[in-house]
Length: 638
Image 1 (cartoon, rainbow, N blue to C red):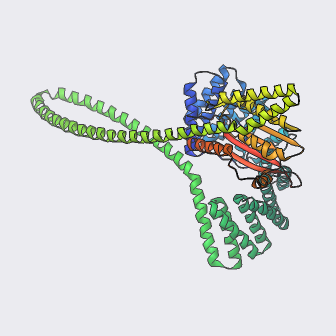
Image 2 (cartoon, rainbow, N blue to C red):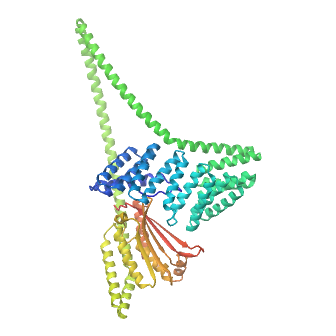
């Protein structure tokens, strides 16, 4: 279970990826017989995947999770399960029931002091209130969440909650508080140097100022939002800023400037296919051209406005229509069943009446026998014809089935060959990555350091260094044949490696931490993270004379295991300049790791993602580098 950030909420995963993850979890459940806390987590994860394709299955899995959590006295699991049940009712559209179970989940998690995860239940409650058009209740929940994180270090979560509060206040037409919380979004974004937060904050304040008719200030804030969005290529927030500028100039009576901004927004909105934005832009242009007397263009944009509005309306109603169709089909099936039963009763009564009639008309028995014989002949003929038709149908069906089976076998053989090819490439990439870890350069430097300590008669340091070097080599060899290892083992090998590097550099400090103990049991590919740690030390910290700090942090975020590697080195740009002045060389470690990631992505639909960025201090000076590695919590290597 994760704490939700609601600046933007993605409600559905792509079908193919969702199906693969669900199948992966189901395979684990089928192979595990232990009734433990891990099984509770797996049941809840699988239930969440079925929110979007089979709600009945989702409810069954959640109830199993609740029963198991209660039987093993796993209070956190009970809290997670009730929060998941809230999500089930939310997807079903039963908002009252969703609210009941969200409250129940929050109550359980709060009773055991799980401050971090209780925020997910609170966030669900606020989301439900928003969908029930009860912004004031949503505000109360968001304020409660914010009070729990207000004194903690600034994070994206702070910006998300402040943004949600501002939106809820705006929905309740409390524009004073809405502006106040959008300003808080800006304060956090400036403190964190977060472009997306800045764009949302400036656009949010501009929207409030438009409602309070302060058009000059709205223009000033919109221009700031547009500048940041353009600089960082954020089309969605750029469209919002351009819309605000168009509205502001429209209200000020400057039709020319308003049209310019609306047309710029239109170009971007058409590029990303944002129908909600197109609806606003078409309406604005229609009103402006109507005001200036250009009735032809006004008519054109009026038609486009209604067309895109109808399209949005149709998409919003598809789900409702599907539900109504399903209900109709169920009702129709029941009607047919009832009608069949009535027909059976009528046939029974008719048979009884015929029997009585035959008894009363015994004098016509001979004629009835002749008719019965004739009918029998007809029946035999009909049966023979029916048998022939059925036999022909069976033969055709068998022929069709055999042909399909042959096609399936052929496809399976092709898929098997492809999988074996990818498997061979994957193994080869792993071997290359292992060789890159134990490269001669690192071993040469390590042995040189040991030799130096021996020459200088620093026997204790030499012994300590040699012991850690031997432990590290043993770990690498033990992991060389493993496809996945526990995060705890990966952290051990990283710690040994960094300790060896720290002995060779003066004034270098480092931390390697994991935010939640249950993550230590999660599986990760061995020696995947070490090349990025090595780059941070050799290409970043090595060129520093002071303030050499390295931080490696593992934590959970939105169903993913995140590893962040931060250093206070010279940064990516400066490192590239230094390397450019040296003799051209090919980094075997980097190439092997990239090949390895490519194969993993081919087999697992891009399950591992690597992001790199330079860090800047308050004076906009480079203060280091951050590498962010994202992978699924339950990664499987088949």
